[in-house]
Length: 102
Image: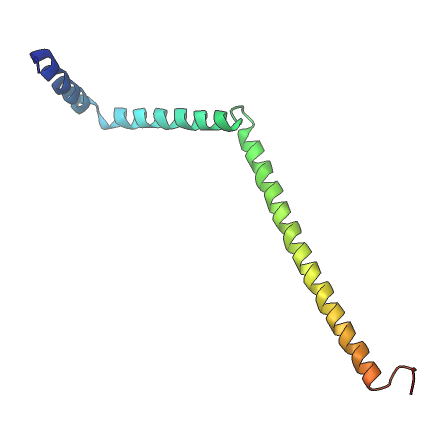
């Protein structure tokens, strides 16, 4: 390595050591904000209404889950009621409570 090539990494290390913790934290904060902005832009949520859009999506998902849960509960109630009705009709026929062939 030539002398300028050897000095370049040393200068970089010295510059990094001169960076204060507050400056480093600010640098990280700016990098994180830029990354988040890029991610939102990639998702199509870069405008000011991104938070509102995400809230609406969460509300829609919650409503879908409630509807699905209600549909399952209703299905289980209908099946249970059908089974109980069939048992009652069977018991009534067996006990000859219904006016049929004797």
